[in-house]
Length: 161
Image (cartoon, rainbow, N blue to C red; front, side, top):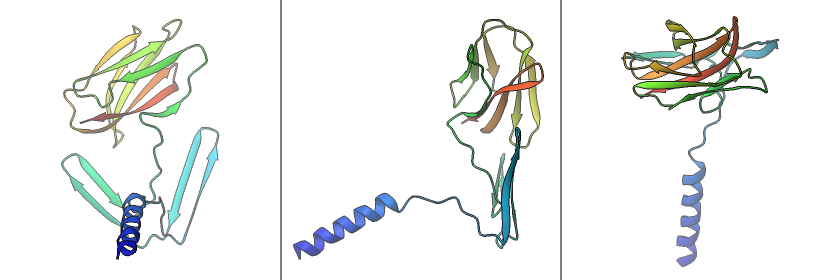
């Protein structure tokens, strides 16, 4: 009986620790991905299960191939070796601080989008630390881009709780 209890304890602990992982997979007839320079695209064809649910400020799409966003807050980084850009705190409740550690401020701006791609704010950066007011926005995920001379330097995923 002791061996049975020991085996069951081992089995259940293994099941609990490994049972929560989920693979990012899609069932589709066909699909693929490609990249050309800075443009990347992934697609699927013939997915059998598709459903879209929406609520207050949220949209959940089930069944469609959706690329994964890697990293805790930086989506894409094109920083040079002589400067760095950071956005904190993330999640941001009231204000988000955008900090630039660069030798000279020349033609930098930031743009803030919601996940639907709607432009919320676009401002020139005139100092090395800028406070971005997040109080008027609903809870959700936002995209903040830092741009210099029409070139994206860094893109952040910003969470508003």
